Each structure stands twice: as C-alpha cells, then as structure tokens.
Image (cartoon, one colour):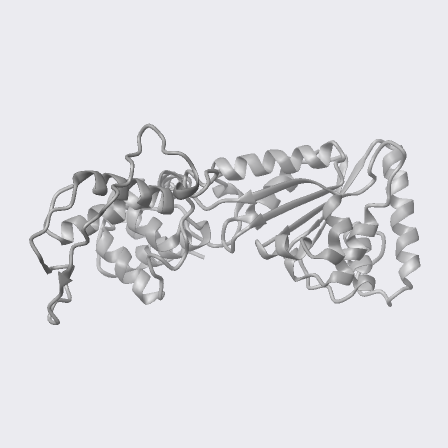
Length: 364
C-alpha cells in the first residue's frame, strides 16, 4: 500500500515502517557484535545464550537477521507466544520443529520429550544442528524457565544437541539472578545486551533507510536528526515512528525538507520527551566520574564553588531569560561541568548544553 507522502518525496516505498523488513536492515556496532556472538554460539554448540535489550532496540530484527545467516543444516524453532506452563512449552517446541501438526489434541509431557529427543539424535547423527529461540523470555514463569533449563540436558559426551537462545527485555537479567534459577544462570555461556543508537548511528540509520527507499538523504536536516535522536533516545522503533509522522506532516504542509521545529511538533503529538529515555553514554563501560581517577582531558573540580543565585521572572516562558547576581565562577568549574555532562549523558550532552547556552544569550 502506497503511503501518502511517497510521491511527494519521490520514494519507491515507505522507509520507516515499524515491521522488521530485512531489505532495510541496518546493523550498528552493538547489533553487529550481537549477531556475530549469536551465530558463533549456535554454530559452535555453546548451549545457553541470552540476548537482552530495551523495548524498541531491534531484538526481533536481529533474530530475523540471525535466522537468515544460519546455515541450512541448522534447524530452528522460534517461539514468541505466551507460554503458560511447561507442557505448553513442549507442545510449542515440537510444533515449531514440525514434529507434530498444529492444533492436535494435547499429549502427555513425556510424549513430547521422547519426540524431541529422537529428533535431536537423528539430526546430530546427520551432522545437523538445532536451535530453540524464545522471544519475550522475561515473561516466562519460573516453572517454565526451569523446564527450559532441563532441555539443555539433551547432549552427548561432547556436544549440546539443542542450542537455546533466550531473548528479552532487561528484566530478563533480573529473573535469571533469582536464587531459584541459579542452575540456569550457571549454564549461560554467552550474553549480549543491545544498546540504543548513538547520534551518528541515528543519522546513518535514517539516511540508510531513505536510500533503500530511493529517496534523498537530505529530507531530514542534520539539526532535525539531532532532534530525532533526543526524542527517541536512539531507539530504532521510536526513530521510525517520529520519522514517519514527520514525513506525513511535511507532506500536509507541502514541505520538501524537515527541520527541527517539525520534529518537536511531532514529538509533542506523540507525548515524547527529550529525557523520557535515558541515553546510553559512549563511555558506559567506565565507572562514575566520582569513583575513578581523572583522565588527562579532565579538570579537577575546584575545592570551593560559588553558586549563582538565579531570580526568574514569572512571565518568562520562551527560554531561560534570567537576572543573576554579579558573581564570578572560575572557568575550570565550567570545564569540569562539561566533562561531567558528557560522562552522564553521552553524545547528547553537547547538543543539550549548546541549546541552553543559546537560550541564556551566552557563548560557549
């Protein structure tokens, strides 16, 4: 179905659908690393693998990419339905491996175990592999997760017969840390957490999708992409939603290019806030600034800092116009503050800082 704005922007297809279309596949650094780890874990028969990521980071897209990368000798079962109990889990597994027909009368738990064991042994003798992928695994009950652990007992003295990939939101890690699931946690051999896009990856992502739709990469200005990043937090799903709505509005207003003001309007309509999603710092592997030694680029915090008292007038609504007392703050404090912001907020910090400096009528 052709979108309203396709002809307006000269597009062959809509570039920002939220469905995981493989033709629009873009793999930023975190996703490429994750795909490589998942593929390696399955092909080398590592047993249990866990993939986590915030809502909208592209876990389902990565799974679809994985299924296309695995060799034909790897038989896969993908489960994304809600699973109520261990018996239902076994029925879904056997259905996905095509060991039983869907909608057949429910069998005994041990019947499913026998069918699966026989299937895995036959595939192993033929040199094939088998992988079970369970999406939304954070919603599984403790009984079902324990049954998943028991599936890892399908093995020979040398290899695991069934590779199990658990995919879920960050809450999955909390579930696996529960004392009653410590046996399952100890069997996990590989873990990967998908991170949101950086501001540069967000720009590449948007322009890549426009290119695949045969559109101009200049539809969104650089400032508009920065605004998209702020409101989306780097989550690909939200990036798609904002971009799609922005292009609809631009079509309605007969605009050929999208500027930050239009992004802000769309974000307000969608009830999105710049700080509704915590951005991921490019230095997230470092401990907090207060807990590590200063780097060469950092400036030591002054021993005493004089705080500026700000008196805001009640009528000010457009910016941060204010009258402050005439006090001087050492330049080193502002350098330290800038570094602290970068540590806390990541690549978005310089954008936010620049905007607030402009509102104050000052210069960097």
